[in-house]
Image 1 (tube, one colour):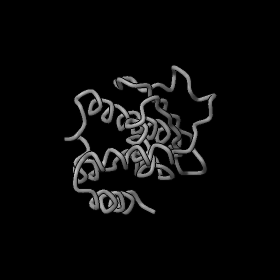
Image 2 (cartoon, one colour):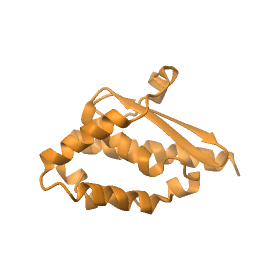
Image 3 (cartoon, helix red, strand yellow):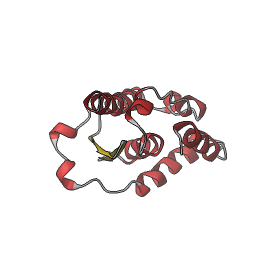
Image 4 (cartoon, one colour):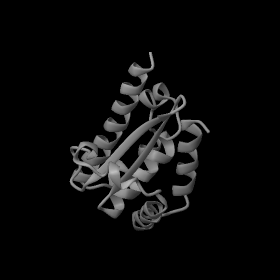
Length: 140
């Protein structure tokens, strides 16, 4: 499934909620569904800088697709990275690099985060795109 189709699914899922407390609860639910990251990847090298909470992100190539795994010590943040992984996982690096993550604005995510969480969201996206750029360059 392509990136835009995944984003549209998320927009549809979030559209059933009227207020942000329900959306936060849904993010918490999504955080519980995030597959466990292998403990060997919970290292300082995989910590995302710019996040107030700890977020570990790993990326590996499987064939020509990039696969992400992550974890966080904060439940809302873990839900946010779960959404990003859902959209960007199992995609070609160049598709990740150039992805327009329009779902973030459409569901009102960034507008309803604290400034520190909003900065963390941007840091997570940046790191995922940097991994994609590195794999894209390596495979040229």
